[in-house]
Length: 623
Image 1 (spheres, rainbow, N blue to C red):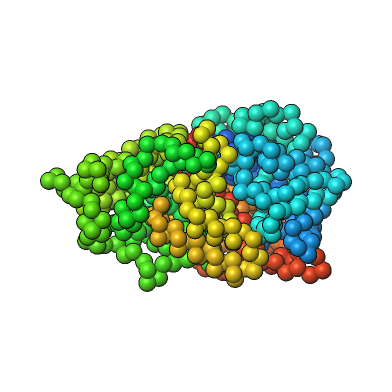
Image 2 (spheres, rainbow, N blue to C red):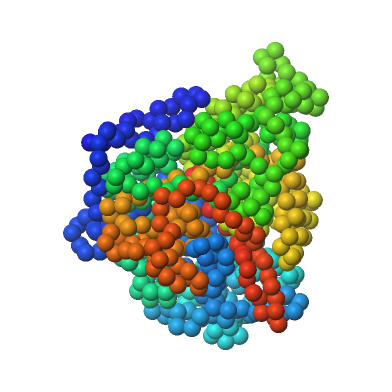
């Protein structure tokens, strides 16, 4: 019997968002369609709306997850350790000056409509991004230093860059079919369905805030998947998604609360996975929003331009309490901007850490001239009360539980916080227009830090229409920008890592954002319907991978073993990398490590940072 208990919400108490299970749960073998058809369907419950399925502008966690399965990339991140492997590009060389890169495109690859994939497709994709500001919205930083892109023949792609670029093997840009997208006139519009792709699946149907349906690509160059369809089904919150898992309406869910996870992990029909995540959670502080030409936009409180006020806010937020009370211990405490999963780039403030200290924050604000009124609320330099808005996502467990803590702490230092829980759309529109003071945010990152670092640059601010860039906090700082350009051109991994850490130190000092913590990925699936899923990296995650291994290798019950994609992405059928893996040390993974021998680039370990911010509907995080 299943008894679903209402969500309990109380100040200072972790949200009890779960089902109370009092007996064995019988889950139907949902890999088979409910209509009785023989199609094997993987049904995934998601709690984030898809912002867009246009690969040039979609940058949310869910949208990117779907597009990774629909479109292939020049290279792909390995299942085991995030090292780079060939994908559409089967090999590559670089010139001695590191300014010319020649990629050999794999022969025999076809789009889902049967037409051949050639070098003209990536050339079209990158050139469109160079020419069209809207086409740069999601991933413009990857091509910002490209001088030219040409297909010299059907299987040779030549990219010339203005400066040496450390991310050339981490270009996380979906390659689109020229024969389809050359007919598109508005690169900000939604695509037509079915959507032609070169990945293991292709989108056949999409209904906003309801579902996305994909079919297995019969022409996929690695071979057809074991499942015929993948359906991403939207639920307003994790309570509803867990109930759907329990009742057999879906087969796989993630973003579970600690209470839900603990309740599910003892069930005989459910397999759970607790893995170290690649995500950080944050509060962004509006330091004075402006468009990419420097024109001020929005209505952020001008007092937040003062770094001393931002630093006091940062000192008044206690990450340990949030880890314990909001994430139930399934998280780690805040440190630097790069998540601790990526050890070589992760940074900690060390002895410069702002320890949680309300008395010290109060003294700092006193010294900075922010006087308290008779009601205990401080005033700005013009004598106006410091009333600040905190934008929160109405259906986010993190926002709902962390919000009262943050409001209470900031009240202790004389700031009056109004929490504004609104829809994903409203949060995104307000933050894109700079119409916020404080806002909950967060990002999923991958091993190379370039992209997430680019989000804090002046150049990544949007135009007046909200296109052409993907900012996080609207931070714009010359010192930071100079360091960003330096790390982008630095090919020595140790030197580059040191620059990246300097950038994080600058962000920490200037406090345009406050890292709240790094939550684990808590996932569950119906093991009566599926043998399991490939994890990335080893003992890592099923969903929201840096690739498509989890969905491509989904193995219906009785069709095991679960594939393990070894060197070159080949299925070694080892059966390793299934679920119920605890979060643990995943080892060193410094991003672009290049050994150049005779002009040939030898990849030791690499990654690329793919982060995203939706332009229409974000939830509590982006890709």
